[in-house]
Length: 127
Image (cartoon, rainbow, N blue to C red; front, side):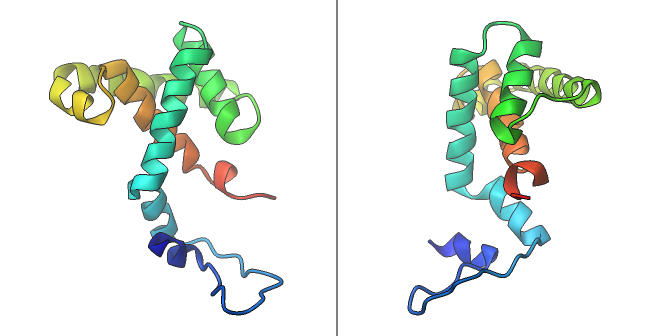
């Protein structure tokens, strides 16, 4: 897959016991814009809307836990909810963009939030 070159994927022609760890801005841009990663964000948004209840705070905590494996601290939760409300307001003003992205404004907003969460260093890097 072409975008894996951005992540320094080794050639499959030779055995490679260990990969070199890199972290570049191009990798972050790939994760934000590559269709495969965006489809993962859409799937995550659908899962959040289906499994996390109706309250935005519960959904935000669930989304954060899906991406990072832990609950958000109060500051992270506040920033996440603030971003969510901003995205929902945007997609309510631009329903044609919401429809292209995920249908309803709330689903589109959760897709954007999921895309951001999946791009967090904590979600990408295994320590």
